Amino acid sequence: MKKAIFFLGSLLLLLTSFAASAKTEDTKEKITKFMEKSLDMYNIPGTSLAILENGEMIYQNQWGILSDGSNVTADTPFLIGSLSKPITSLAIMMLVEDSKIKLDEPIQSYIPSFTYQTESSKQITVLHLLEQTSGISELEGLKVTDKDWPKEGAINQAIKELSGVVLSHEPGEVYEYNSANYLLLGAIVEKVSNQTFSDFLNTNIFTPLGMENSAADYESAVEKGYIPGFESWFGRPVVSDGFYDHAGAPYGYIASSSNDLAKFLKFMLEGGDLLSEQNLELLKTPPEEGKTYGYGWHFSKTEHYPFHGGATSDFRAQMFLIPEENIAAVLLTNKYNFIEDVQVSHIMNGIQSILNGKEPDELPVQSYSIQWSILGITLLFAILTIIHFFRLRRKKVLNKKIPFTFGVISLLLAVGLIPLFVYAIGTPWKSIRFFAPDISLLIYCLVVIFAINGIMTLIITIFKKKIT
Image 1: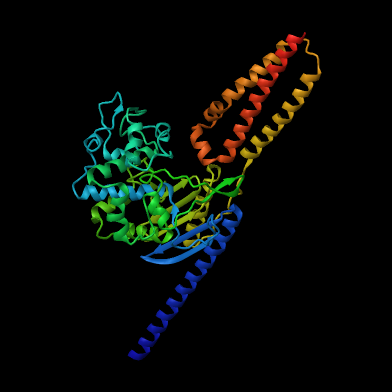
Image 2 (image 1 turned 30 degrees about the vertical axis):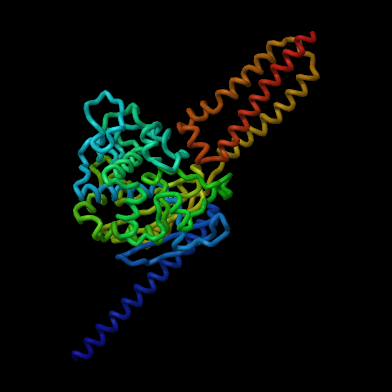
C-alpha cells in the first residue's frame, strides 16, 4: 500500500512538473513572438530583455544589432537613462545606513556651496530630492541636464550652474519630476564618500553585485563595449553621434546590460549584504496616498509596484519589479525620439500581460503626424516663397507698403517661430533638439525660409523703390 501511495505521489509530482514546464515554454514562446512583432512594428534596431522569477532568470533574449553592425548580447552595455535613478537611490541609502547621510537633513549640510532662493522657511532635504519634491522646477533642471560638460568635476560644475535657482514650490509640497534632483544627490554622494560618483558605484554596487558590464563614466563605458545607439527620424533609425553627459550618471547616463540590471533587480527583490532589509524595504515601499514616486522609483497607480523608464537621445529602457510575486524584468532598446516614448511602455505592458497568463493588448500604431505636418508646411512655404520671388521681381509694385509689411512679418516669424513652438508644446528647445532631431531640423528649415523670404522681399522692395 505504501509503495502504491509513493508511486501515485511521484507520478502526480512528475505530471505537475511537466505541466509547469509546458506552461513556462508556452509563455516563453508567446513572449518571443510578441517581441518580434513589437520590434518589427516599431522598427527598433537592437533590444535586450531579461525576466526574473523567484531569483531565477526565466527568460532572456536579444534581438538585432548595434550601430556598428554587431549583434546585441546579454552583456551589451546600453545607456539606461533614468533607470540610473534607482541605482543612485540605492547609493544614498547605503550612505544613510553608514550614518554618513540623514534623509531629513538639509542638503546644505553636505553641499554648502549650492544655494537656492525661496520665500519658504522650509529647506530642501535629502528626502525631498529622492521623492522629487525639492521645489526645483523641471524647466530649471533641464537647463543643466543633458549638457556637454567637461569630464573633470562635471557634477560640481553642473550644480554650480544650478546654484541660485529660484524654487517654484515650497520644498516637500509638490511632486515635479526633475533630473536635477538626482544630479544633486550625485554631488552629495561625492562629497560624503570623498570619491567620484563613478568610483563609488564601482566599488560599492557594481563590483559586489557582479555587474561587470556597467559603468558610470564615459571612458569605463567605452572600455566595456558601449557604442552609440540610433536617433529616430520619422521612425527610421539613424546612427547617432553618441552624446554623453559627463555629469549625468546620477540621473541618466549609467551604461549597463540586461544581465547586469537583472542582478540589480534580483538584489532589489531578495536583498543582500549591500543594505539592511529595513532600508531595502524603504526603497520598495509605495509612497503615501496620492503620490506615485518613492525613493528613486515610480509606482504603479493600481498595483503599486515599483518601475522606472529611462531615455537618452538614442536609447530607451524600462524595468519593473513586483515584490509580492517575486517577478522583475528589464528591457533595453537602442533607438529614441520623444514622439515614440510610449513604445517601450506598451511592450512592457504586453510582457506583463503574458506573464499573467493574459493576451497582450494590440500595440498602438505609432503616429508621425507631427513630423509629416511640419514637413508639409515647410515644403508649402518653400514653394510659396519661390513663387513670391518670381512674382515680386516681374510685377511692378504699385503699393510698396504691402510687400514691405509682408517682409517684416516674415522676419518676425523667423525670429519668433522657435519661441512660439516651445511655448505651444511646453518643452525647452534644447530638449526638442536633443530628443526629436527630425522635428527640430524641420523647424530650423522653416526659420530659414521665413528669414530668406523676409530679407529678399525687403531688398527687392527697397531696390524697386529706388529705381522708381
